[in-house]
Picture 1 (cartoon, one colour):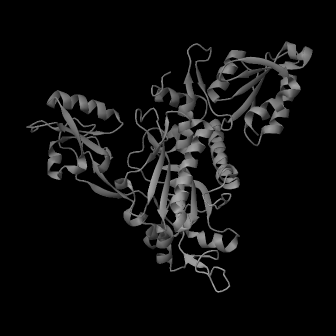
Picture 2: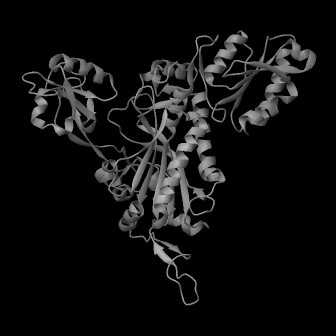
Picture 3: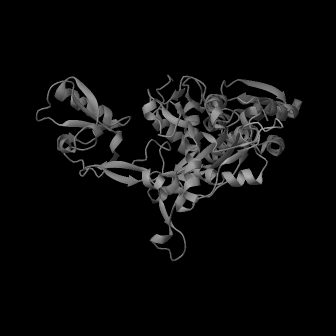
Length: 516
């Protein structure tokens, strides 16, 4: 199948059929913006999280040296979903984490004001004809374009934000039939509110975190005081965050509950640009290493007008999803945040968060540095685990009509939820007993990295097809020849090729190919 032509409907159907992803609360009709992971999806997501943890925390950057010529050092924390409300005041989320929205009075749909565009005539006046509004990368984009070209001939696109509100009366909303249904823009805070205490009032209001990063910043002083870390070093955190998205869409890509894997890397201001470049390049390399190498993955440096006021640079690792093609969607952001966050928390908490570096500063008479106090700068590689899982599934989804099982998931073996399957060719003649013994041996050896499946039902072809759709890289089949010479058939998922190896070599075969 050609790149960019993959069917999102087919991918979603496979995810449901094979137990990767389910609609949350499905038996009650579901709840928009929330998704559950089935047995295979839960293991795939765990494998992705573990790969991030190993390569970012336990053995950062695979043991390579950073710009300072030393091995990269990182430590983990685990911070709570509910933080003190003042954390979010200091971070700017309470006052600034708002998106202006417009509502459609006809369809009851709500749209982000800055995400709505409008088709207008390339030249001249529209007369009594409406302007045609649409949401980019949605069905309304093509539908409204056809209407606009029929009405005006040549058209151009302008953002709705550039139009006077008085002109909204002439706008046909993306999914509406009647003109003039859009309301004036209004502000909506994207944080979920909650209350602390059994008899809580508005004075006990709190929020579900919209990101995991702030928990790291508020524990920066404790980490420095209670460990032997020295700058430059990173603090990593994974966990669930919440954003009350107005229009969650595109499967799990834009959800209201999602998991993140974030690192805050603290360094001296004079070295921060070099560290930013280091992390930007490594994170792109990392995504390639787990199966996203190719033209569907790009690294995009933000233009100056895209940067936050405190940022000296931001890059996004972007993936071409079927629903964004031919464009790309963000998978991870790598941001140079300067000292903004520590400065904000230092000011609001009245707690000194400066770092004392004994290796810097003016030289004393004895020739030793006097030391230097400073607020470290921070480089933040922030990845979305749910988007990562979705990208891996979309990239791995392969259709080959020449195969007996035309659909399969070409997942990297490190990420595959099922590492191997063991089948008796038939459920008789002692084959199940031999297969069960091999299954037990492989499970004992590989349970830490993934599942080993056992299946003796239906034809061998259907069992292979199930494992192909699950992304299982290898299948071992016990047959009549096994009982004679102690060899098994091993089948490769990607090629369909079958070879025979000694049954006692099956474990080492997986070790060599899984890299464990």
